[in-house]
Image (spheres, each protein chain N blue to C red):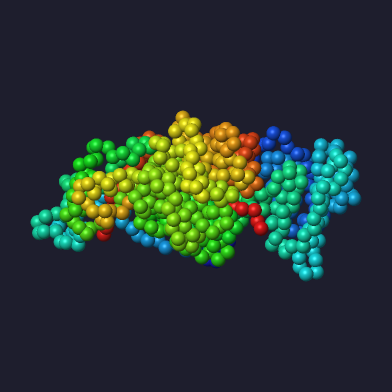
Length: 424
Length: 181
């Protein structure tokens, strides 16, 4: 009979709870074209499971833009660029090959060396060497995937970023931050009352969120490094919809303290409250432009919820959406050329993209209750919340609508995703 | 056999984990008990305190607890996408407004709610509008501005967890919570 001491029982429970809130990511739609790439297991990597190349391969496959080419059966297995016989790989249909080595150093760190080669042109495209502690191997794999992604697609990779989200299990709510591949969720705050609207400071150090623990919506700012947090908006009535300025110094918030839900600016510590709108109705869901000069927001001042733009220097307000009777939740693209939002059409809620210059709208998702979009810092992927079978899941779609991912957590409803900034 | 026992033990352990508290690795959040939104249970007797701290006169039930009084009803319901107060609820709202006027400086919180459809933050604002609409009406019936605080739960705290019209109807709602209940 197996005897489980109290300690082990507790440890198992802890693992089980965290494991239930971990995200599993599945690709359900791929890009228009995929780049065939062979990632050859690095020499020496079996000593450090889970292997670096398995994380690199999973990152690239999950982007929907790469097709992994199997490297079994090619012997001897190349680990240095000079060992690569390009004909072996083009015969298998690979356009690119990645080889590498891992070796322990006397100081306890591990040297990870990799090279990316173009199999058709028979040239090296990139190569780096890292010396890292064993605990950093997963992060190193994400960096390698970023380099490969950037070299072959021309876009910045986001494999080294983190995603915040809210998990609900029965009456319990938890704000979590995980790696972009869903691994290693870290708890930011737990509550028996709802949590919503997490938003990352652009410098990546803090998260603002709304908590109902005081039986009313209150805005908090919490430091990720220390776990310390501060109430930054707890005025009479409801306080919600925080949005960071690009310099991480101020927040736009929605306060009902003066009689209706309106937009205000506050310092990141809650001081210096400045009113921005005066519509007498609903103004909410502020989102700063990347250049900090304007704010998109949702307002019903025209009779139905639509998206408007406030230019901060002049105070001018311009309506942005005209199609349909419900357009909400605007989020700028990082290049400033457009924004994603949620539109309701025929009773269904979907994420759409509007270009500022052309005003053209492209509907990106096909669920029925899609909400809360957040844009990856390279502007190429949009994560959002959805519902399948009555269960809250997250999903992601590429900005051209082709790549689709589903992110689920066992035994939890997940919602309110927020994509973190590029690491500095 | 050993594997079967291990599986069984793990199943029991993991099932038990759903109620085992886990340590706070993030910021601890204080649990505060708060007045519930449900109508107060009718109490018998004459010792129930009134919201302004006065005692009920002997032989008279606290009107807030009297199931025959409209004051025992604490919820009004709204149409989809709307914060307009329906005519059928005006007498109820006026009754609470007059009661607050008589019970100064007693206070009330109006909690606004929405159904589950649409943006969470827009629904916080819509719930807020629903609460403010009723507050205005109570003030017209005699309550003073400082007696009523309005807050919104948006779609975060549905009374009915279903995903159909009847659940949505029940959730588009303001609840009145008197201070001290």
